[in-house]
Image (cartoon, rainbow, N blue to C red; front, side, top):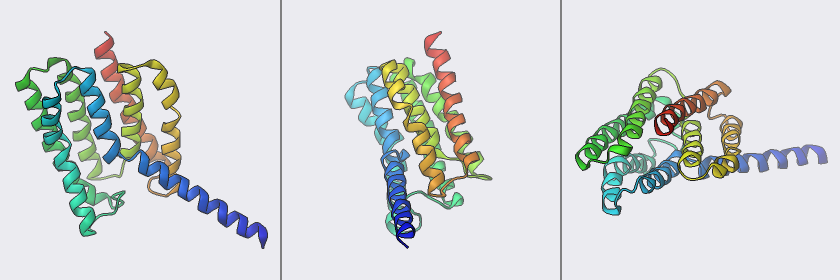
Length: 200
């Protein structure tokens, strides 16, 4: 009986840990942070960063919060089909922001944003048929890009978060191992394209 109680407690602790990891590294929080840090790295003016946030980040976040409050989605957007409208908003926002970057003549970041557009397009079409882990895509890109643009030591320290997030998503049964691997692979390939361009 005691062993059964201990096992139940351990499972409860692991579940809380997995939920905590999933929330802390949720794309809805992580992507805006990464976007801001990268914009600062490329010396984009504060007023222009605010403008980019208004077009790139705000529409998707507001759409998400609106439907979360209505109860039509859960925080993880577990239902694959519910992700499609959100990704459509993200796609429109990314196209608009890319055009804005061209107008503002921030040529150094246009390539990176073009990769972002390509990734969002891929996500949209993949999600029409299959549920890929956006958590893994974003955490992989977050850790690798900050390691590239800021300090290689950061990458060495933060890389541990990638398998941790993968474990959390699988433990909570939000994704299969294949969906987790696919998300991280897409993030890794996106980073590779960016790395080759900015280090050539």
